[in-house]
Length: 240
Image (cartoon, rainbow, N blue to C red; front, side):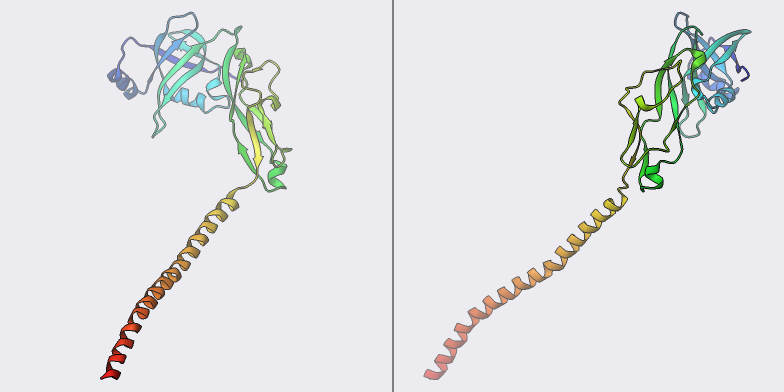
């Protein structure tokens, strides 16, 4: 693979207004730093950084930052992106020593269709999408590929089940679940509201009947009170 070189300019001015002027010129602010070196403010072309982020190894890409003819071997340590349009706003570069290990996060890529999905009707749940590892800069994996073809319904893969390159040390908790195949819950979730609706409708249908009975009972009581009055009037008429 060809060496990636990103041109950088040193800068001495700071602040929001300066950063706006930089972006208007087609550059973004950044900082170059290392373990035992003073941080150096720089400005870079966001298109070059965007191309690195879109590459297979992404932010773990090892490349050279050319600062006034002096090249530094770096990785992209931090970056800030505008939330709406996704434009790069800021980038931090970490100068690495090729003989010293780094702690980085590597993306996981799943391959294959699980038997638990294809045959048993389950759903694949991708829980953890990256692993934290330690290795030398030249040994950073572009990605970690995990074959899930043999994963059955109710089965899972943990971090300890993942095969990683021999020169890479796993730092993620070995018991952390990476992926599993679960039973679909859609039918259960639909059935529960349907049962609740049926219960509410049943209660609503029964309610008028109760009210009706109540009214009938009240009317019956009123009718019972009227009978002695009528009987008394009838007796008075007979006496006359």
